[in-house]
Image (cartoon, rainbow, N blue to C red; front, top):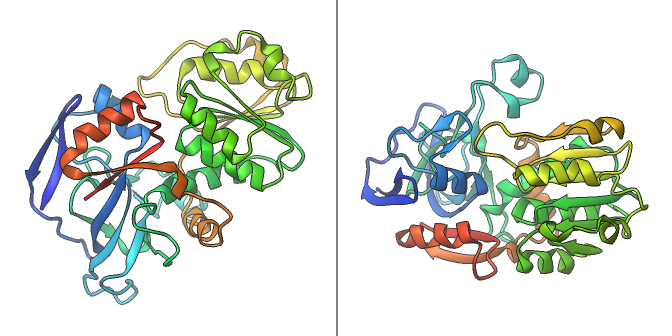
Length: 344
């Protein structure tokens, strides 16, 4: 099969590789479309995320949709030809966290598209049958990859207290930040603010119903931000940018007694942050780790019932043969790009 292998920072090789052979509990999915995630960008630019580093060429890609190519004789599998979205995390099911219903923090997780496990920037993927979710006709192949991002946003919202009547902010208006903003508005938040350095993303936040959108580099006068709140700041902030400056800004802007939920991923390990202000305000801190299996069906329901519109975030679709162009577009956030999808 054809695949795009990351062989060095900012360098892919399109090549033929052996098609995956399914294990006893796995089906074969023929990949139709795969999204480029922020974590993919970290690997592309830095060849690492935290302790995980590129040691040999590998196939990235964990946001994807496709069709069942081979059921592998599994009776519970959707039939061959069924359009599906795929949960990329394969949990062990045996550890205390999996048994407690928190497989997203399974220490034995096998993550599709994360070294050394091959991902979806290829024609075929072998994946456990319980990781595939049939798609209704109302969700297109092109938007299917965004369901993985929406599932993360759904999980983030279920971890925080009821947002009804609250003033909230999202720092980072990329795909996950915009989806969180959309869910906050849907769930009755009183005011939702957004920050992002990219004008097109700030405009999209306003289109979704955010009360205001700011360039985080220009919030010199905090009052311009606070005038949209209770004068003390948002009661709840979601950090979705994954940048140290944004982490610090989240603590600085949150109202006393409020909460900061961190979704963004910082790829390079440790950094310095001043917790003094956060302690004096007695802020609660929450970290969001991906999603739970139940969040995927919920994401599909939200889109199918038109509570959430994910199609508006797919701004560019490029063929796999242009993967380096796609990543260049994503890294530099050019041409109003929000979610870039590869047609495999």
